Image 1 (cartoon, helix red, strand yellow):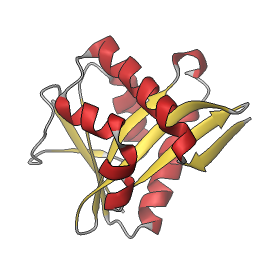
Image 2 (tube, helix red, strand yellow):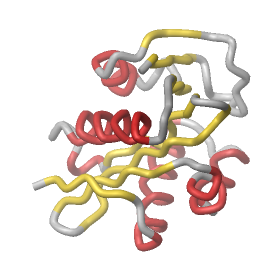
Image 3 (cartoon, rainbow, N blue to C red):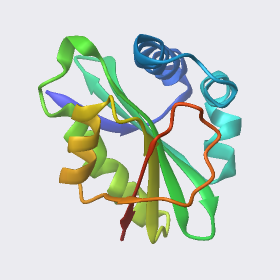
Length: 151
């Protein structure tokens, strides 16, 4: 059974470890990653964002953050699912919950950045309704795909 819950301080270590794992597998940690993962409370939550957590049998197995950008635009960031449970639709469940949370926060646009090597993630984002876009300024060297969802 997968439970989708709001982030609590007890999730901080898992939020960091799950995201460091995929970033280090495909890329290198960047300064923006470190700031967000070292202080999710200050970097995300205190600025009006949110973090969604997927739990299975009490363990944190997935994460996704919403970072308030400007006005009614939020960035979907740091979506991660533990490799041990990938293929169980956890990313889909987190994605749907994150979109619902964005609506609750008053968002009219969700924006994300990714990389073309992350094909399963891009496919998931497209199934969730995201469309390719460009023109956003990215703090990440690895970003070569930008997508957005109009709510």
